[in-house]
Amino acid sequence: MSAPLLEVRDLHVHLPGVGGARLHALRGIDLSVARGERLALIGESGSGKTLTALAIMGLLPDGATTTGHVALDGRDLLTLDEDAWCGLRGRRVAMVFQEPLTALNPLQRVLAQVMEPIRLHRLAADRSQARDRAMALLARVGLDDRQARAYPHQLSGGQRQRALIAMALAGEPDLLIADEPTTALDARLRVQVLDLLGELVAERGMGLLLISHDLALTARRVDRLQILYGGRVMEQGDAPTLLAQPRHPYTQALWAARPRLGAGRDQPLHPLKGNVPALTQLGEGCPFAPRCPLATARCVDQPPLFDGRIACWEVSP
Image (cartoon, rainbow, N blue to C red; front, top):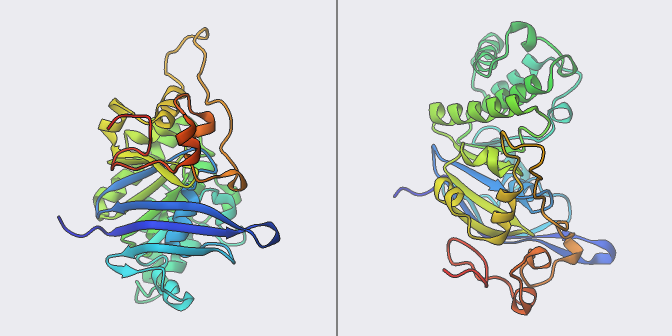
């Protein structure tokens, strides 16, 4: 097999805490994305999904420290200075951020914002060519001329999300990271945006790292899944296999909590009990232990062993 486009091994991130304390936020994340592949990171808010993406993009907050290995086409990203990152972000790796109304510049028309990375990375000979490329991109994501010349506040939530996708694609990246791109959208638009991302990956041969809390919606639109919780990978596998037989108690709980189409009003939802632990509450054991029906004393005291599929003491290989 060819080398992966993105390779992350044993990624640890520590964040500054109160009184000089260091908070161990990511605890040995391993992942890879090949060209043309769609990988989804799934978990509740606070599980470490966005932090993983920010570490890959070199956008961690001041005071954060990172160890491990993060490489794009074999190039070590953790050693890059900001000048090197400026040439890489948008051109080789781009990110669709979670909230388009804050990610887009409210004072610029959408067309100008999509043109900016094209001109910055010198992908057009002149302004006219940059405009033509930007217009073609906006049309590809489903925005017409009138919407292209609008300001962000004049667009709907779905249209703003499409504008962000066009902006991320403008630099012709090899890897696209989409952070909760459907959070503020209704059910119909969520499906449309995820289907659009899948089409773009197939057309352009990019790798896609998709971040979501919605296992049911996302799983059928990606190739592989990784379930994150407490800064650790709880379970991973190809999407059809993992959906057919989720093994980790956390994955099972996420799947059981999904809304079911056609379910009657007398059929209750099954939400997860408890909350995702704060970073200050994470110990050395399994972070899911306080909410897990299978937890034993060993789960609380010892970090779970990862067998390549799941990280759990109590589930048989």
